[in-house]
Image 1 (tube, rainbow, N blue to C red):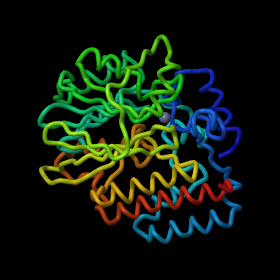
Image 2: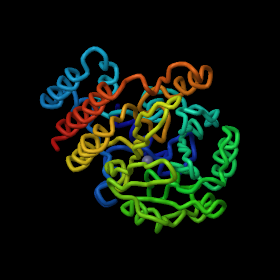
Image 3: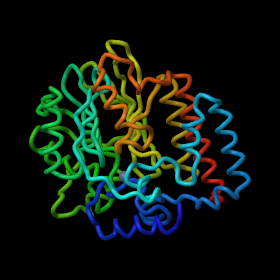
Length: 349
Ligand SMILES: [Zn+2]
């Protein structure tokens, strides 16, 4: 990853050009918003720093040891100078042109959890005995009305049943996860939850053409959110933004219970951020036997487009999101932490 590529990404974002998925995650990298935004520091080492730090390379070797042979490809993907990149940034880094943004066929990933959204970013709809919980809301009222609502209907879900909306995170002056919330809040009376560390930054800086929802409830680490027969665990995973949240979801696969974690973002650019991820993985995810991670931008953690297509083509076949099982996924999380430690070491943090 060269400085030039990061510079390009930052320049595009500063110009507020709406282009496939350049809206938020990882935009700009090094020093873009920095500590002034309340610790929202996405710094990553250069490839040279990463390769030349003996301590970083020792930690990479440690990650590869945890990976063994069965998780080696995942470890190689995570243990890079940037860590996992979402689609638009990965394409930029590879020198490829952006792909046009498109709505993805809504996909039932588990009995009670649906992928709804676009190639650039998405939402997750969780069905319960008493209504629907939505994670994130895409960019705007238009996308809520023209993408989320019809995609839910196509999947057989009634948007009027959305009771809660959990916002994974928000960026000042940006709306890629938060923009549709006000429309859904006003139209269906859904209650919006967001971590105050982010809402206090985004509400004062909202764009007049993208008004944001004022949260009805604060989201905090370890908080339980119960709707009908389903209880989610909200977890605080700061780093990409100060208030980034994750959600542990008890899902069912043809009636059998499993647990997955929705990661609002996966950057851990400071020691404190890494420690918080470690706490969330060890104290919440592992005890709840989480065995898969998904995120809010497809392709960031795995080949989501292919996996979603597999599910649509063969809904009764094996679920690619349940390929690990809890033991291997526990190592998957340890690998992610070890690679985060390696990046910190390369930056001398
Ligand atoms: Zn983001």
